[in-house]
Amino acid sequence: MLIRRPPDIKPSEITPRGLYLDRRRFMLAAGALILLPGAAGAALRFDGAVKTRWGEGLDVTSVEDATSYNNFVELGSDKSSPKRNAAALVTRPWSVTVEGECLKPGALGVEDLLAPHPLEERIYRLRCVEGWSMVIPWVGVPLGRVLQRFEPTSRAKWVEFTTLHDPQRLPGQRRAVLDWPYVEGLRIDEATHPLSLLAVGMYGDELPAQNGAPLRLVVPWKYGFKSIKSIVRIRFSETRPKTTWNIAQPDEYGFWANVNPEVDHPRWSQKKERRIGQFFKIKTDMFNGYASEVAHLYAGMDLARDF
Amino acid sequence: MVGPRRPDWAKRGLFALCLVPLAWLAFDVANGALGANPIEAVNRRLGDWAIRLLLISLAVTPLRQAFHWPRLARLRRMLGLFAFFYVALHVTSYLVLDQFFDWPEIWADVVKRKYMTFGMLAFTLLLPLAITSTDAMVKRLGGARWRRLHRLVYPAAVLAVLHHFFLVKVDTTEPLLYGLVLAVLLGWRVAKIKTTSKSVA
Image (cartoon, rainbow over all chains, first blue to last red; front, side, top):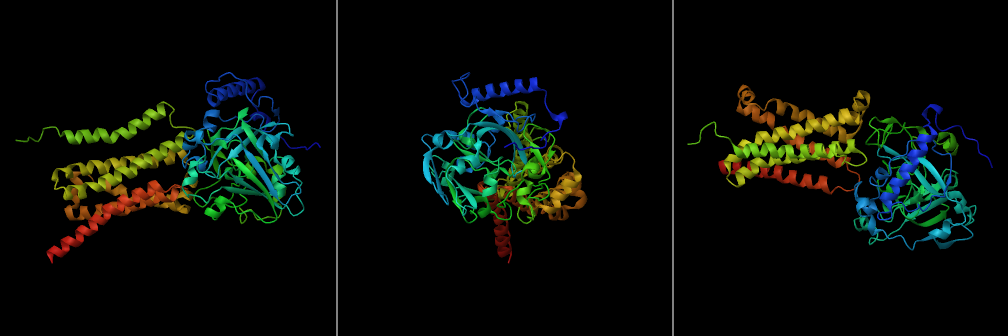
């Protein structure tokens, strides 16, 4: 099926192709140096991922910034500690359980979960609820295609995702700053939307631990905390999942968490964002710039109330 | 005999010491060592040192009295002024680096966000204290009035700690630690007033 989308980016914003390719090559090389110490120059694991047109012309955030400025409380409560504590998170082997309202539940290794699907590279904007943003080239497969294989029933109205709960491998869980394990959720039409990605890599290589290895969600029109990391369980359910940040501070972190410049976070405005690597703040776009693709999902909803 | 011109090495050393956090920050800026979001890092670092120096300056009097160390008093003004110096830099970094003079946004922030209201209020309370810190001003106001005015530092410190506390998302260890230190420093003063009034009576 051919889905026609209006262009994401104005022609004037598009970086010349030559420059863009050079930068990509540089980024990938730099990524290799950082992600694979001692193996500089080795082939990237996901070099063969199918390139897509998402994010063409967007200025990709440096791999150094994207892998050193992370919110992953399970690996440390400030931005720099997840990278420091990354070694604790051993990701092999890694099994994912799919259960709930579906005909073919099961537990399978992360490789088998993704094996039937061609990997794609998608360059998405990532907007954090804290007011900063990045542009990240993810590698993964559309979540909807993976979910289909488990044959969700008509009762599967929601999808719940759970992060690994293991204080040995995720030492941040030794402190009860949040109600572990981390749980996030989507409505089924959000989960099966073509933009929703189940990612195993970024910058052409495997996800580093601090970015949610080995398997994470990427929902680019929602605030970053919806894009749950290090997933071990996917559950189809008839009722709306209870999600971690929403439980912790319901007035600050809504279940929907759609990027919305009109609805302030109680402690700060969401009108603008600081794109990492740039000095001046930029305007935040409705649904993080993906409104033409996702706005119809929320037709008739009061987004100020259901934030 | 101690002549008036003899250099006060403790004072000079403290002056240099108080500049170390700023020098360290400048070094990190120059070396790009502040990570992916350097503006946030500059702002946070300045704010951290503002609170720390504010608490240190509030510790002078309790330490002086507890250890019968009268010469400590001469360092108090410098510490207080350095605390204000870091507060002013912290506020400036917010206005310039973070918001880049977006006055409507800044105003909305201060009015709508509790932690911003507290922070700006703390800054406003400290401003007259910095202005009246000179010997001439002490003379002009008279000791009693000057001391009364400078009690504003107590609400300012409480507001500063709350400002930090309400900003933090999950790990409240550091603001709670500052809160504890402040509680001890203010509690000590309250206890002192009580025992003094008792002994007078």
